[in-house]
Amino acid sequence: MDSDTLGSRIASCVIDQYNALPKTGKPTAKTVPLSLLPTSSTGVSTSVRKQKHEWTVLAGFVIHDTTNPTTTSDKKSQQSQKDETKEAGEFQCVALGTGLKCQHRNQLSRFGDSLHDCHAEVIARRALLVFFIQQLHQLILSQSKDGCNSVFEKASTGDSNQRFALRPCLRLYLYTSQCPCGSASPNTEPDTDADSGGGAAASALAPAPKRRKTNPNDCSEISGSVQLKPGRADSIPTLSMSCSDKIARWNALGVQGGLLSNILEPVHMAGIVVGDLFNHDLIDHALNQRITASVGAGKRQCEILCTSEPFERSQSEMLKRYEPDDIITADASVYWYAGAKSSVALVNGSKQGAKVVKAKLATACQPPKQRSEICKLSLFAMYRTTLAQYTRSDDLEDTQITYRQAKARASDYQKPKAELLSTDDFSGWVKCPPIYESFTADGISIHLNPSE
Image 1 (cartoon, rainbow, N blue to C red):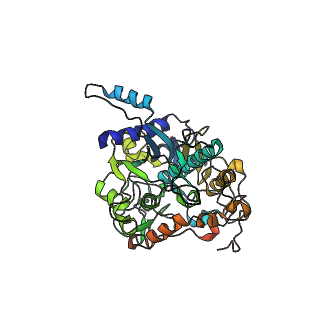
Image 2: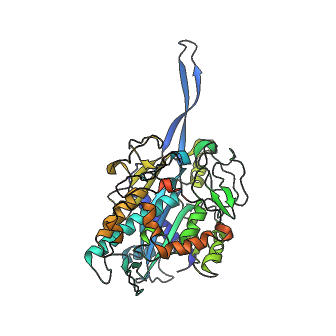
Image 3: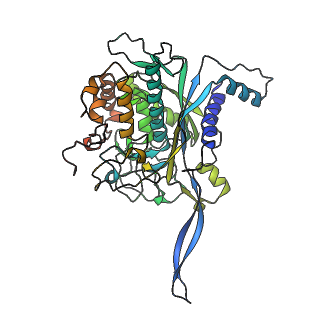
C-alpha cells in the first residue's frame, strides 16, 4: 500500500467515525451580536445580529491490523477496495477529539477534574488513554494469554514487574485535519478573529515576545524550540506546551504517558497523517529530528503522511463556503473512544452542562457524573480500578498516593523523559506545577499551599 492510499484510509476512518457521532458539541451556526443601536421611537437598544459559522480541528487515533492485509488488483475499483478493507477490519478508529481552546493558568483546577488543553490532538490522545485502560482491564479480567480480545498482550520482557504491550501486528497512527500548532506548522497568518481562542495553525519559526492580537494561535517560544500555547490573544498565559512539542514527546516516549507506563510497555506511533497546512520538512523536523539527541538517530521515526480527504468543518472547507468574517472557531470540544456509549462534549475543559466553580473558589472536585472521563482525576481513578485487578499492588497499599507520585513510580518512563527534557531542543519545557497534580484518586487535593 502506497503512502497516499494509507494516509487517505486513515483519515477517512477518523472522519467517517466523527460523522457518525451525534450533533452535540459539534460546530454549528451561531447568531452573534455585532452592535447595539438605540431605537429612536422607544429609546430601547436593539441588537444587530449576524450568523457566524464555527470551524474546528479533528484528530483521531487509528489502529491498523497488519495480520489481514487487503489485496487488490489494478482492475478493482476504489469502492471495491474500500469494501474489502471494511470487511477485513484492517483499520479501526479507536479514539478521536476536536477542539481549539486552551485554559490559562488561573483557570486550572487543583483537583484534576478539568482539562487544561482542549486542542484536538490532546483531546484525542486522552480519549485513547481511556480506551487503553479499558482494553487492559478487559485483558486482565479475561486472563487471556494470547490477548485475542484486546489490543494488548503480556509483554515478553522477562522482568519481575510484568507489564503489557501492544500486539506486534498492530500499528498506531495519529490523524489531524490541520498541522499541529507549534514548530511543525508553517508561518501562516489566520483568517479568524484574535479573540476566538483558536485561529489557524501556529506560527512556529520565530519567538513571540508579545502576545500579538493579529495571530491568536501563535505559540510563544520559551527555550530551545519548545513553545507555549497562547490561549486567547488577550488573556493570561497558559501552561500548555504546543501540540508539536507534545506529539514529539509521544513519539519519543510513547503515547501511554507516565501513569500507564507502570503496567504498559511504550506504545509508539507508526505515523502521523496531516491534512491542511502540510509541510513534510517542518513536521519531520518537529516530530522526528528534534528527538534524535535523546533517542538516537534513526529511532522513533514516525512516518509523515499527507491526506487530501476533506473534513467538512475544517477552516479550509468552511472558507470555500463562507467569507472569512463569517466563520469563527468552535467553543466546544468533542471526544469519543471505541467502546463508549456516545461522544461527550466539553466546554472550557469540563463536560458541557456541568456546574463549574471558579478554580480559585473550588473547595472540592466535581462529582463523578459531572466530570469527563478524560480528565486526569477520572483517568487516575480508572487506572487504580484496573490496578486492583492486577497482581501488582504496591500503589494500592497507599490510599493517599497522588497522581503525580503514581506517575513518578514509572522509572522506565521517567528516566528517558528526563533525558529528553535535558536536550537543547526541549530544555525549556514548562512542567505542570505540583499543585495541579497533587490529588488522590478520590479527588482530594493534598497540596499544602493552594494559593501557589
